[in-house]
Image (tube, rainbow, N blue to C red):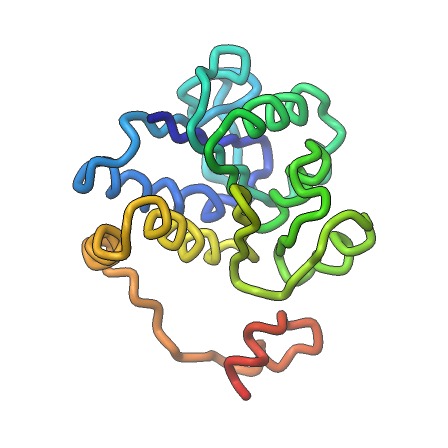
Length: 210
């Protein structure tokens, strides 16, 4: 199996590194995909949003068929939605893949590629209204969503939760549980300061505090 992660300049690091880590543990310890490929438009190093530089494994022209495609978000999505080579790649590989996943504003790339039309989806809380205005997506304020073969996650760290849920769905909860334990991924319930009271905070945070 091939799990592909598409990256581009100004991609948000944790959007793809978090899922990449979960998939890596799945592969190493639980018989997951043989290949987890970092894909970009060229083989040139990609500088991410916070300064991390990543060397892709393959270009979009070299990329084999994918069983799973993950599209992260970040500032770079605002440019890449108008990049026909990137969008055509997502359309082509996404239509053939068993599962397509996005994190944060990667949902805008899925939408432009025609993969979110009529589907439930989420994105970073600061971009929920922008996604709603596109008109063809049922936007929900959840940490992650699934609609048929398309999974979408809210902002940044939510991609880890989505990936574990996807693995549990594709395999079973015992496998996902062992991955969760190995990663020691048990997020603290501590809420710092008053950020969760921001008027724009997503609905799932507000419901959790009710």
